[in-house]
Figure 1 (spheres, rainbow, N blue to C red):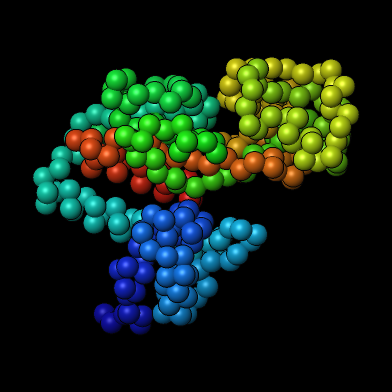
Figure 2: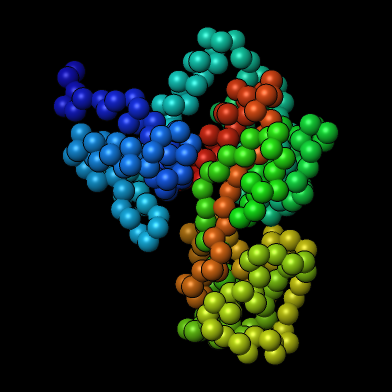
Length: 302
């Protein structure tokens, strides 16, 4: 059967996958070691080749169109198949273990609910999961991959290790649908009518920064605070109707889609949250690591 459209050049697809994953031409350029102008030209060529628009610019970010989402899923699947073939040819065994470290919230709310999907795809890889937000010495602690979040990850990472950016997200106020219906939140200051759930330790994504960004000063007199040790504790509270918490969108996307949680005020925190993989580039488990990292990226992009 003849195909109506000639397959695009491999380099165009590789650049597209990187640009789509990062939602940024400049970050794709850094990853591919080419100029931003080159990535931009490649994307124009690819769109011309396919006859569809793949990206839409919204602010500083490049967002995928519906055809772009379809192509990204196919490209990542194809690259995954290619990687598996290369692994087989070079006799890099996937079978074995991986030790993953990340925050308690990411593990409890995002990774563990999806881990069965990874294990179904790669039953030969055994996953060991550790909960820690610290910048551990990977070799000393026998950690194969750390997943870190924030805007200071590269600065805090030992230069001996690779630090790979894999996207960013916004932080929003979230609460239960029931609470939102009860209070009918319309303005940022309306949240002060409810309990506010925050973390008991200093962090970059706190309520004071959000209220300052919204030009609400009266939060300093607010009395109804609940402080917890981790974001998953905060979200457990708000899911059961206790107040409003701040959370990265990727952590609550499933709950929002199901209607259990809502974003009562659509103003994001002024600081976006960046995601990074940290690993030893000389690890003997690179084939295994690559499979796991690409799987996380694929799940994040859905």
